[in-house]
Image (tube, rainbow, N blue to C red):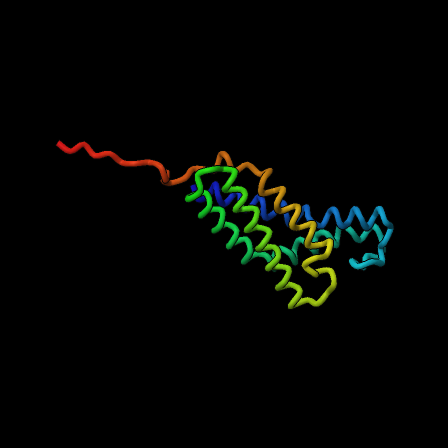
Length: 155
């Protein structure tokens, strides 16, 4: 049971790390703004920057992943409805991303890490989408049912 919740949490975390910078890069390419807020000099630097962002994001969000995994485990153990479970997971995920960006803003003072900026918005959107699109249904097996009553035969 724990391994399946772990795989769901890992999938959501890694897909968010990998996919969230892509809309920002697409916007950079479309607007041809390579000297903008990300500071790319050429189109050819985008794959290297993508790997660097994934690496740095992975380091800064390891604690976030542990908390996210704990949240998913707790939600799947105690919430009966899969829809309600995913709502809770999505909200906690967005709040954890906000906390991660706030911590990054405190350490690395760049306008890129503003909580209301485009970069965190890509992470919020991707995380919410992946929380809903990754398959939790097969992994969702509550340990106990809240409505289940044990009857004892007393003779």
